[in-house]
Length: 68
Image (tube, rainbow, N blue to C red):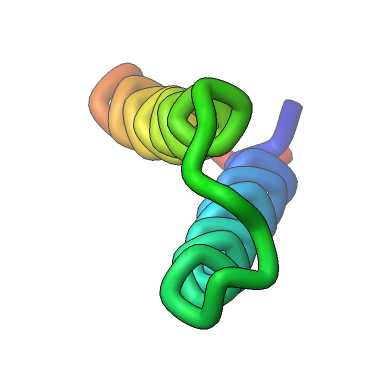
């Protein structure tokens, strides 16, 4: 896979995770959703996806994935 494709996919995942966490946090602040295990698991899932995409990007950069 080309480096630009990896970078674009990882960037999109990071942005979606940030936006999802922001919306979920605002919904909790304004009591649109109640605090529950589902909310905590959602935050942890978004955090894990964010971290995985950052690690994928850094490993690809460290291994020297080049554009074709």
